[in-house]
Length: 458
Image 1: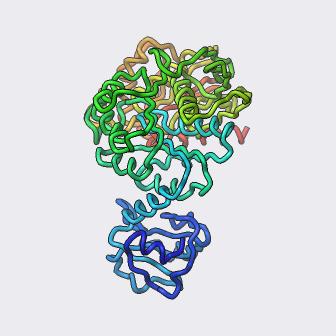
Image 2 (image 1 turned 135 degrees about the vertical axis):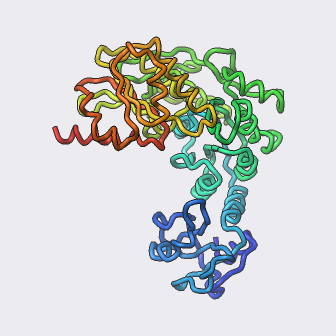
Image 3 (image 1 turned 120 degrees about the vertical axis):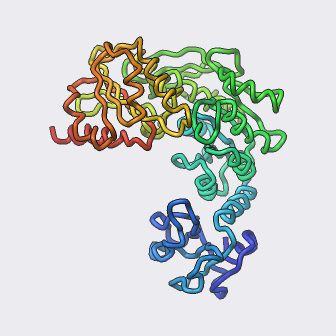
């Protein structure tokens, strides 16, 4: 887009008007990741103000800028680059993203829910790529009102099918995301106890997520997890018909068979199509089934595809089993709430393994007023499980230790990741079978790094 067009789209004022015909290719809000010729949007955030990094953005190659009128140094921006001023640069970014999205012919699928969004998105892309060459999925977990616009800017103009992940923390976010993405298909993975510091109950979470349907076009196709009673109940209040997937209740898309392999992978058969899923647990089978439902709902078939050869890769730290320094580790610490933690633990205990079982569990964050009770709930879940060592990291995770079976195994408690990383190797032995789970903010990846470096030293 030319900078002078940006002025029209965002209702702004152009500075360095002699360069209004300058083209920009790509958009960034981080001065460290600006590509040459890209538009840098300076956004005022809760912690940082992008206007403070304008010079760095220009040094990195930004070819044009989008700033706010209230920037005190608006007339002193260095370099000879065109820049557009607006009242609210974040709102202007949303407007620009919607303008680009509306110009695309691709079908858009939006994935939301409490657990499994990113994994479902990645698996959907793996399946979709096997039947549609011009497929796209949002990178990482760019799923909020800052990340989704960036995801949209990265869509190629000739894309045919786009998969985006949508996440919210508060009630007013989903309507904006729905209008921005304008999806053709939406899928809800499940409803759990996430973001309860902002949303007071599971029903409240479901209602907030379902704003995606209420604010989408009338003919949007809606796919639900039939086994999630809260989700189904709340959805029926706004719509009569849905496409469903599930393992326990009758649904439009169901599993033919599931076989757990000794290497931690799972062989899953859906509509006579065999898939090799390199992830552990029933909850991961849900993610694959959800992905399959999306691809089929989009109208694609696997009739001429050897589905067992599809590489079902997913984002790191989301349930992969790895061998590190003679340890066997399931790394599942990108995010956590009571439902996902119990699901991961259930999968861990169901896996055959004769070695010592070690649990490394950290705090689950953003659970609101009941955060202590939710950690106690996980401890009670462990009360009938057999393990050798339970290691907790964080203040809240101590509640897990207090409420589990104290006779099941040794218990080690750390205040934070720093304390754990300096001491944890004293409690681990070669061939330990380890499950690691916590919210990302606890930093269990630092513990994993310690184990990895230990491998390099031996």
